[in-house]
Amino acid sequence: MKKKSGFWWMLILVTAGLLMNGCAVVDEGEEDELPGASGPIYNMMTDLSDGKSGLYLTKWESPSNYGPFLVIAFEREECTFTFRESSSADPKKTTYSYEFAYPTVTLTPAKENESVVIGTMISGRILKADEMSFKDLHGNPVWIEVVRTK
Image (cartoon, rainbow, N blue to C red):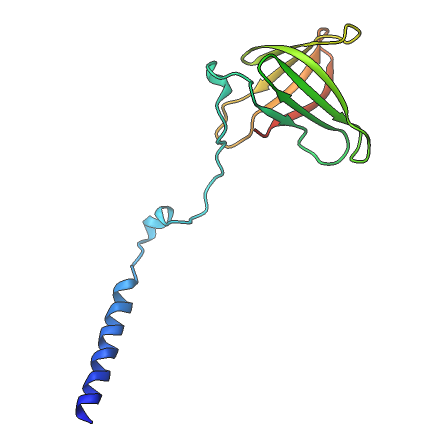
């Protein structure tokens, strides 16, 4: 009986020792270094403000899911605008060729009856997505502001 009692005491002491060693003391100043600690969500997309990156394969969308909805997808030499008045409306697609020199993109329509549009972007911010707004050649705002999603 004594041998069994000694075995159980030894098992309890070993288990307690393992449990105590698994707990770490955290000083007050080390809270930011803990894994899984909350922190800011960084803009992980390519920085367009450096002048080295182009708009190829980027995608821009209106920030709201309500009201007018605009999606712009840039390819090598042209971009496609998909516009909907509302979520239930049929999408209208327009194609533009573009020239990009940060922070300006000049959009030339494929159809002659449409006018040239100039987009101005804000890029390179760490905690905020890139934005682009559009004006016509006279400086009047056209379309809605879009935010980069890809």
